[in-house]
Image 1: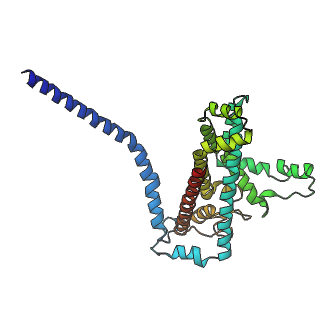
Image 2: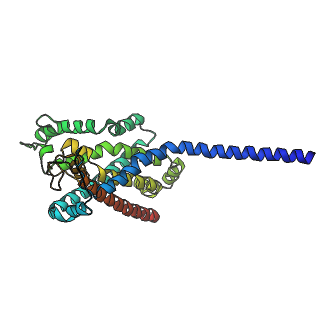
Image 3: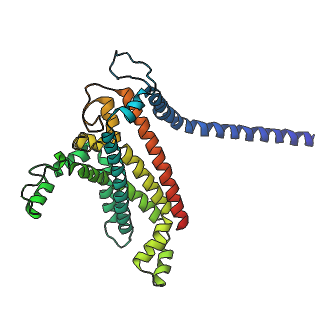
Length: 326
């Protein structure tokens, strides 16, 4: 009797544990389900649809017929359009990505090191101020920079005229020489705070005991940064570098709202948007198109995707190799 009672109790305990495991498994699945559905509906399905539409001549105009045209869009992009203009827009995109990545992360790292010092008063306020452009939105940031570069009352115009002594300062946002650097500056200003926060998270994981030991041994500020700080936040620097590269290669919002892709500011991302929805910057030379060509824009976006993927993989390999050498 006692053996049978013990066996029954053991069976009940086994079944209750099995139900708990089953409940835990379903709880995990239910918690993951919203994220999975969001990824499928808003990420994977649109990406696959975009890849399929890149082989069509769909225009996006309601009621207009479209058909399968194979590789014609890709042939037009790489072969039929002006080679010089294509090289210019690809080179401009590369310059945009490299400049933004280097300057944005360089300034963000410098400010993160400064704001990580405990003796600095009001550092939380400074952190919030530096991060604020990230949450303002593209329209607000574009408006701010348009006011900064406006003629003849903008601060930059007055600085060039009254402080630098330039008699006829150029209208920056309508200049073929200065519009592109101005767009790059706005991109860096907007997203530098995001990189700064990530660097701060990495710096705060470094124990102060390590710094104190280095200073006791007679290490200087540069030696401490190069031998301790940088190696210990290298993984953070890798993340920031990849995010900056991907973000700058895909960026088009600031260009669209500040210059509209004119004055040699059109990048590959701007071309995709302008081709899909019409307007300036739809061609490699920054020209406009008369109608919507969403099939061709889908092909351009696939080229952009492949470029981003290749650059990201190469950057990750190089950063990993540099990390191993630290």
